[in-house]
Length: 153
Image (cartoon, rainbow, N blue to C red; front, top):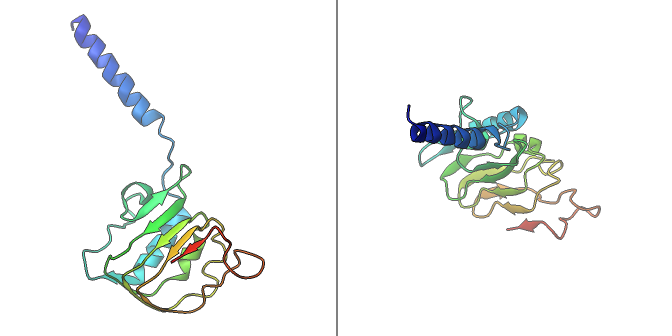
């Protein structure tokens, strides 16, 4: 093997090592993934089905999902997705969720009691243009109203 070929191989090896070896994002938290699978089981879609499956990692390949560097779900973003069904109380398990957008779907029924009780990181909630009933008051502030940093749309 010539010296230039050896150097290219070595450079390629170093690049691959750094790109895979120093990835900071963890795989999806199992509790978060299970919570999302329960949520998706209560929904159907008039468009293509969600690409969510136990066989794939929710942080890396699931539509509408973003995670932090510890593999915790921080964003559930599925507006105008043709979703039909109820909102499952399992979303309350996503304790690091900061952005929730399920707007412009056909989600119906009552919001589960206590849905937002453990969502201490929530900043954006958009459930508009659905057919939901219930109270959005939550323990985000001591007075039972949303803190000034939460944007409810």
